[in-house]
Length: 292
Image (cartoon, rainbow, N blue to C red):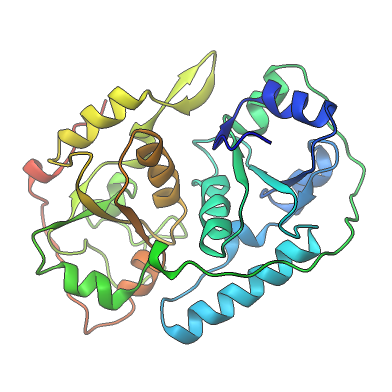
C-alpha cells in the first residue's frame, strides 16, 4: 500500500478491493465492535485502555504486551496496519495512539482511517457483526526509543529553552479543575507541567459534512504559531496517557513539524510522583491558544 498516513474511507475500501495485504484494527470497546465494525477488522481495545509509565521496566512490559496483542491480531510486518476509532474527536485520539504505538514498536507500515468509522458509514460502506479470528503472527518487535520521551527527559526539558512543552489536554485539566478524563480526582494532583504551552487537542480538527477531520496544514501551523511553536521547533507533547497527544502529533507531523516527540506517560505518570514539579493556579494567557 502507498505509504500514506491518513486514508479516506474510499482509499481503504479500494485498497481492500485490490486485495492488498491489510490488517484493520478497531480500537473501540468490545460491545461497540460487536454491534458493527468494518468487515474483517480485529478488535484491540488495549490500544486505548493500557496505561504505562516510562520506567525501563514499564516500557519493556508495554513493548512485549503490544507485540503479543498485535501479533495475535495478525501483524507480521508484511501487512499494512490500518487503525480506526469511532470518530476523530470522541475517542480521545485512540486511533492515533495505536499508530504511535505501532511506530514506536518499529512496525513498518501503519495508517489511520481519517474520520474513523463515522466517515466509513457516511460513505455508505458496509459493516459486519461477524466476529473475526485472525491467524496469529510473530510480531517484528524493533523498538524505536527515540520516538518516546520518558519522565527524566521531560524533567530535563524544564530547564532547556530549546524544547517546547505542549499540553493538549481538555481545558478543565489545563486550568487544574480536573486531573483526568477518568474523573476529577483520578490522579493525586491537578495542574500543569511547568512552562508548558497549551493547545486543546480538539482545535486540530473541524467537522466537514458532520465528520471531524484534521484541519489543513496551514491552519495547524497558524495554530501552533499562536503559542510560539514554529515548524523547526523541538516539541514534547503530553496529555493524560498519550492518546490525545498522539492525535496532535499526527496533525503536526502532517503539517511538517518534524521534531515532535511524545511523553507517553503524560499526566498519569507525572502527577503520581510528588518529587516532580507541577504548576497550579491561573495559567498565563500568553501560553494558551485561543479557543475557536
